Length: 174
Image (cartoon, rainbow, N blue to C red):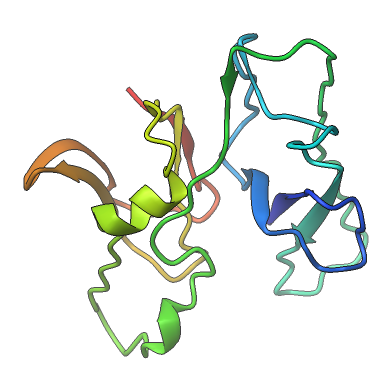
């Protein structure tokens, strides 16, 4: 179904301190190869000390003999990269609707990340370039729209008009 990789800044994999997403993948996402000038710190004072890979399987018919061949490859270098990357998760990352009932038939749910919220994650005021946009609704959604709004105006909009679970999308931002 999908997997999530968390970065552990403490190096103690037992303490549950996996607070930062390092990478995510779901069916339809394909592989992601970052440009050579991008990376995330590993080791040292500001880097991840370890990773936790969480795999979520989807086998509702409980079919026997299914073999998982998915994986991830992380490359390491001692050379500091020009730009640091990270993941900013918005909306409903657990696809739990924050306790709202899904209902019978079409329903509409809206989630916002106002500027005062995103400024906490982007507190250093450095310019940010969005490389990829990841839509994920499990099997509960039909359509999704993501808008970037600045000063009351939509400056970028992406949407999936017909949701297909096996094409979750991990699309490069145009």
